[in-house]
Amino acid sequence: MLAPESYAPVFFHSVLFLTIAVCLRLRGGRIGGAGTEVAFWGLGATVILFLGLRPVAVQFGDTMNYASAYAAIPQGEPPTYEWGFSALMRICSNVVPVEQFLLLCTAVYVLSIMYAIHLRHPGARVETLVAFIGAFSFYAYGVNGVRSGMAASLFIAAVASDGPARRVLLMVAATSIHKSALLMVIAWIVTSRLPNPRAWSAAWCAALALSVVAGARLSTLVSSMPGLATDERAQVYFSPGSEDSTGLRLDFVAYSIVPVLATERLVGSAIWTDRFYVGLRNLYLALNAFWLMTMHAAYTNRFAYLSWCLLPWVSTYPFLPVRRRAGWKGVRRADPRRLEHLSAVLLASVAFTYFMMMYVYPSRDR
Image (cartoon, rainbow, N blue to C red; front, side, top):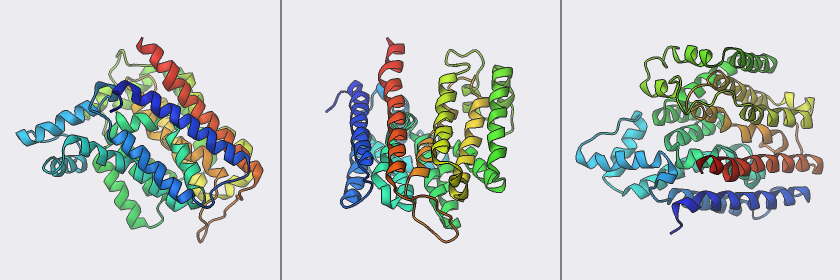
């Protein structure tokens, strides 16, 4: 079995080489085609097995906590998580060991994303999945933030769905796994009712300005909002003066907005005729604006990932072929110039992830 400390290097080296291979294919003017469906499901299964069969070790953060809670259930200690995840733990604890339970959690995490890709981008399954796998938040959501990763992926599947009943069911499932998904649902409802992209661009800029000017005071104000003030876990994240407080992170601000700006610059004004993209972009900006206002809090990445899990979709969607449906105004064709742009976006994204995970974070731990 692979040593726990080797999982991250193996994963990120593999993702880097895989992304380069996909980009070379894109620059050759090829996307989708024969055999890609098999590759799509094969890649998904590989990721599920690799991450899902990881050992219970300190290198995987909260995996240890979930394993401890799982082992305590047969001794009569009920799990204290949200009702959906607690029910899943109770059911599985009577049937399978913790290793298989973690495999199931990883399957929900990855398959929900694959379901969204299958619905929206059947002609570019592998390319879209590679975009998600190479994202900065993907690995951490899978092995550390297990519940929040599952909830975020279920929410992504809900956004991709057309039928209102299916969408509501998936959103309820997401919030039953982790209550942070409720913020995502609220943001989706608000941005659906207020679809003006300029307004959400202005809101994002205002949130950044407030964060720069008010600093930690803004995070304290946000922590007193209804629903957060009485949440013990949220108050830990907002705790003032914590050693985990990060302050103003201009690198993460750039990571949050530069891909969106670059994508829209490359595509041009035609993208604004795609209502699904506009809604997805507005949702992303709304969630990222919330993170900006909590940037000075402890564990700020917990809030950042609520938007960052959408970033690979937002930054690549305009270049991807989509399944056309009634009422859509599609704007894209798989022309060579657009595929070159897609390859550049994929390479930039995986380069940032690789640099941060292989060089920046390891150097801090030394």
